[in-house]
Length: 62
Image (tube, rainbow, N blue to C red):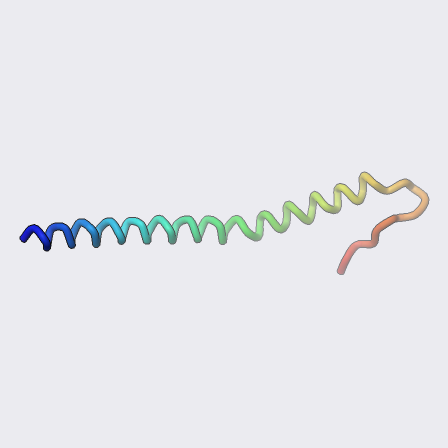
C-alpha cells in the first residue's frame, strides 16, 4: 500500500510539472511575435534617428 501511495504522489507531481512546462512554453510562444514586432520598430526608430538629412545611410529591407 505504501508503494502505491508513493507512486500516486509522484504521478501527481509529474503531471503538475508537465502542466507548468506547457504553460511556460505557451507563454514564450505567445510573446515571440510581439518581440519581433517590437524589435523591428526599435530598429526603424534607430535608423530614423541616425539619418543626417542628406542621404539615407540604410535602406529598408524587404
